[in-house]
Length: 248
Image (cartoon, rainbow, N blue to C red; front, side, top):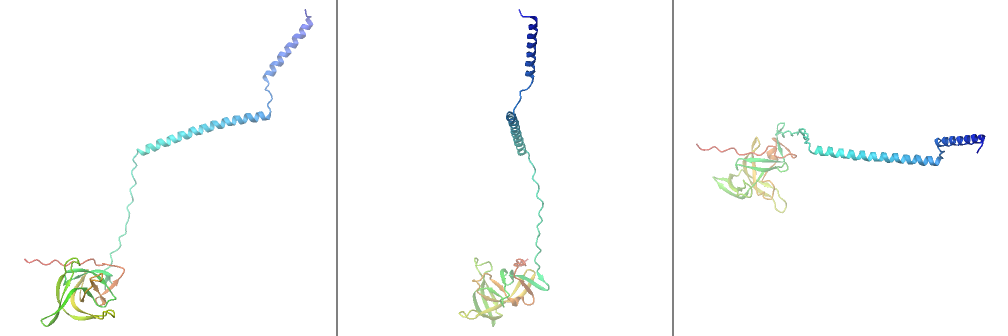
């Protein structure tokens, strides 16, 4: 048997060993810098993964909301905005007079009383006299006076011409080129109407089939009474013959 003294020492030693073991269990083991950095990096990656996943979830949710809104808008009828009224300026009507002068465009409709027809007419300040397209011109004498018979296309060249007779007022010579020489034409008196303006003038008869306009008014007609504005046409519209009086 052990002696009591040795027994007490052994017990003291055993008790001190248990206390040391218990203290070492509650003290954290020392960590070096490399291990700590690796642990922090791992934690950061976990946090980043969680944030990325949350963003993806939010983006999907937002896209779904936008899709639902788009479908709702398709089924909602939105009234179209009424267009504002557009103001259109209407140009002022061309004046028919300029001071005390009668205003004419480069082209006008001219009504000839003798033929009861309106003609598309060229207003030409370069020509001295006025002329009308006449075909089959035949001179003859009646009661000691010179007369002329001629055809006028009152309804256009596609319709039959009408034959007219008129007394010859005089003859006029129109200078042509050197090959054709001068053209001697019979002149008749005619009553013209352009819009509200009426006048009497002389017309020489000639074949104008090669020209665009069947009637031409020269400067003798316009002298002292009219001014020509070549930038305008048909200022006075188209004159129509007055209705004939019916027999009662």
